[in-house]
Length: 116
Image: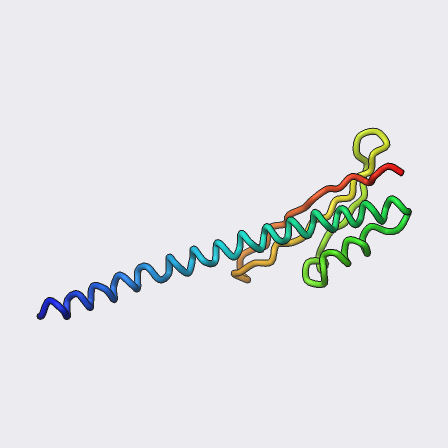
């Protein structure tokens, strides 16, 4: 067997071993980006819900407008008491998953209702 032929075979084996690792690293990077986006959207939605609560409007529709249709589906919006007279709006959303068979974690954010 010639040296060139052995090198070609070795390169193929190395490519087969490396390609799945590169694909996995890419999927992890995309998943981290999706989680960061979901958390940022939850944070902005909690703020919108807090502003709506301040003027005695329901928090959920205001938060849903910020989240958009995809993240709003299955989102939890709650208004609870903080310390003293402070009220808190909490928004929790499911993180969109790259691999659909992996269970989706939830991320959430809180926002205090500003005092008038």
